[in-house]
Each structure stands twice: as C-alpha cells, then as structure tokens.
Length: 114
Image (tube, rainbow, N blue to C red; front, side, top):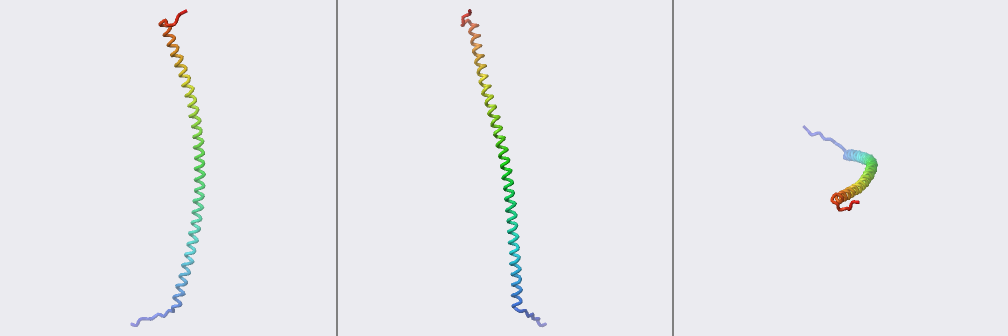
C-alpha cells in the first residue's frame, strides 16, 4: 500500500499559528484585565473593612476610656472616704486612751479630788 501524501502549504500553517498566537494574546489581555478588576475590587473591600474596623476600635477605645475615668473617680472617692474614716478612728482611739488614763489616774488617786 502506498503512503498517501498530504500537501499543505507552509503559509497556511504559519497563518494558523499566527491566528492561535493572536487568540492567546487576546485571552492574556482579558485575563490581565480581569485580574486588575479583581485587584481593585479587593483593594476597595480591604480599605472599607479597614475603615470600619478602625471606627469600631476608636469607639471601643472611647468607651473604655470613659469607663476608666469613671472607675478612677470612684477609686478617688473611696480613698477620700477611707482618709476620713482613718482620721475619725484615730480621734476616737485617742479619746478612748485619754479617758482610760484619766479613769486610771482617778481610780489610783494620782489626781487630786476636790
């Protein structure tokens, strides 16, 4: 059996290859465009998320700062009350000691009786 021969012009093959290359270039350009669009979209979403989180962090920070100030004022108030209580306790203790000494002095006759 004789081998059949196929005659194809080299020019036709080159044209076909050129067409395929052009299609690949177009596809590559489309993919680059899609990647750029996705990149812009993701960048926008990331920026929006960052702004939202920054706002939430600032709100929480302000809330905590307010609570800290409130607690600081309460602690200061408690400290002042403790200082007053300590002063009163010292005064009462001093008066009690003086009264005991005076009672003992009178009992043992160290003080003259009138």
